[in-house]
Structures are given as C-alpha cells and as structure tokens.
Length: 329
Image (cartoon, rainbow, N blue to C red; front, side, top):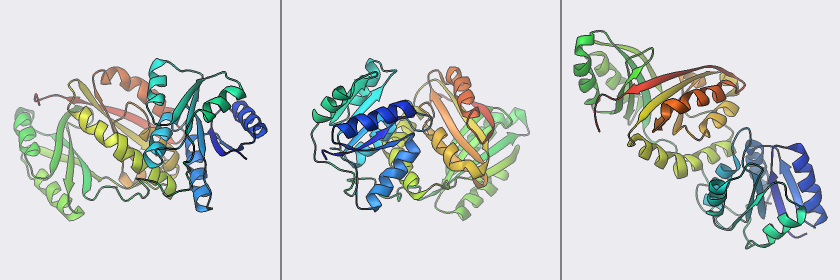
C-alpha cells in the first residue's frame, strides 16, 4: 500500500471513481460525502490509532467547503499532502489552494493518472494519526461571558444621549443603532454572568430605555470533534476576520436566525462557515443564531445570504437588522 487517502466530495459518482481508481493504484481509500462526515472520520481514525497520509478534497460542498477543511487541517498538520479538486475553479481558487504548504490543485474532469501524479508531486511523511501541532483541544472558547442586549428607545428626542450613555458603560463591547424590531443592539462582555446581570440592570436604569431582551452567548451543542474543528477555525480565521471587518467602512447588518434547536449541529456548522458571515453565536437555549455581515456591499450580499440560510433544513426564520452608522470611528 502506498498511502491512506481521505477523499471528500459530495458527488457519489466521483467518490466511486476516485475510490476505485486510487485503490487500483495501490492506495487505501476512504470517501466522505461532506465536511462533517470527514471530520468524524478523521477523529475516528485517530482514536483507533490510525490516520490519513493524503487529503483529496472538493471545494464546493453542502456544509463546509473544502478550502475551510484544508485551512484547519493545515493549521494542525502543516506537512499533510493535500490535493484540492473542483469543477468550478478559477485563478483565485487555484491561488488560494496552492498558497497552502504541500498542496496541489486539479480542475475537474481529470484522469486517475493525473491525480496520482499530483499526489506523488507532494512531499510525504505527514499523517493525521499524529497529535495535532496546534488547535488540538477546544479549550479556546470564550473565557469571559458575552451577551446580546436589545433596546428600544422610548424618547426619540433623547436618542443620541441614550446611545452615548449606553456605549460608555463599562462592559459594553459595542453599541449599534439598527433598523429593525429594536433600536439598539449591545454586545456586553464581563467576567461572569453575575457581572452581565449588573450591567443589564445599569442599562435598564438609563432614562429613555426599554430593554427588549438579554441573551447570553452559549456554547453550541456539537460533537466533540466538530467542536474542536469549529474552534480551530474560529481562532485561525474567524477571529482575525471579525476584528478587521468591524473596522472597515461600509454597511453592517446583523442576521438573526430562529432554528429548530434539535438540529443545531447541522444548522450551526452550515451557517458558521458561510463565507460572508464574520461571526456566528448561539443564544436563547440553542433556538437562535446571531451573525454579522460587515464591510462594503453588505446590503447587497444580505438577500443572498438570507436565501441560503432559509433553505437549510431546521431554519424557521431569518431576519436582518441593518446597522445605522451614528459615529465616524
């Protein structure tokens, strides 16, 4: 046997062809139809004392696209040989894939000898059987408590005074005026839930304020291996993108998604990995997700994102609250 290969592709015929073709070339192959099943398989193999020597992944899949899987695996196993395959490639996708160390790229359709040549062009020796270099445990989740507070302003003449008073409160990480069912959305951060409650009481005491809701951010109920994957991606990709995006000029919109909480793993992972969402949080007992589209063109992207999220099984309703820029920051 030359090597163990993990193939990820959502098309059954391609999985069959790659499995048969690589097996004929003396590779041992396991094929997965999507990102979540691939994460489970990687964890199962590692727990059994095995692993994979090569990753072959499609890009566009129904849950987690192949470039995101590649990004996480490369952060954990930098030398793992990987081949990115796609039928909808362009120069940007090719460049993105090839920017990862020890990675090759093939446009579909291709022949098995092309794939074998791509695999053999890469340096070997790395395997997912080894402990991850980084990001091996989901311990990087928030040390502090975060909560969303939504506020209605009862005295419109005092809108700016209320806005300035709330954003100046200690523990308020952000305070933004929005178009929607409420007037302001606050993100609060503190060392404990008790401190969040004290901040909540201070917000309620501001004249001209009616607090509509207070929703602490919760850890999503995910399988352990999926949780690890999400946290590695959050730390490596989402967190820097969120910080940079908040500083961009342009339009920002919150996305509020009501969901069937029994389907939270599938819904959360699908929404979390949507490219244009810079973050995704779980609130209200797992029955709601909050995300944000920010930067140039957010309004134009919002309808497309809403349509995509609305089509996910278990999503009940999607709402948008567009941020109103009251200050130049």
